[in-house]
Picture (cartoon, rainbow, N blue to C red):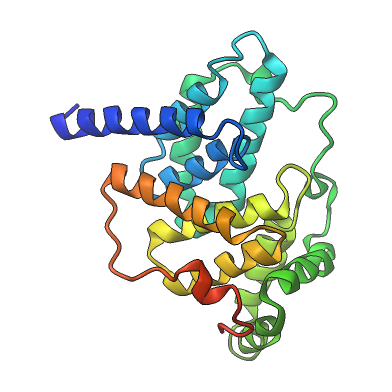
Length: 250
């Protein structure tokens, strides 16, 4: 381990611990570990996902059901957003979690946990109506032009976006709700330095029932992760107030 890596480890651990303590009694109390998992993974530091799990469950050593709940929510967070930052980073986050939590029993859902709809779906395209309904909530007037360009020029991209990304994962709200999903998308997009998409999902967070304050809290958390991991953006990210009232961004 180099000195720089050791310094980052200390800063990351301290930051993660502060997220846990500062979130108590706030909107982020049961969300911070999901948002942080996506942000650290998007910043190409997925090893800290293990630290996040350890901190999130440190007061629940004897509560296996709580540990399962946190792990399930973190897994779902990473699955939903992996298309944004890439499968290799997702796999590295998975490896970090497996090293920390090697017991297969903890990875199994609790008997009381409902199965995700995708586990019961044999034909992926049957999820397209759900995907389009979910997407229309987020994009509204932007959706038809957005999909129309894909239909005209690259139909396979439309299939990837609608059927796989939104049909299979983003619109599956059985583990994480729409508001949480918007937060996770912002957490994953910001480190990738894609300002336009961040704007879409800041607006989408509010359209999914969130508030401008929750959007700013999410952005602040992600900026903290980027500072710890040394990620520097080249593009200027939109402000919440610049996009939430705009009907058309595409």
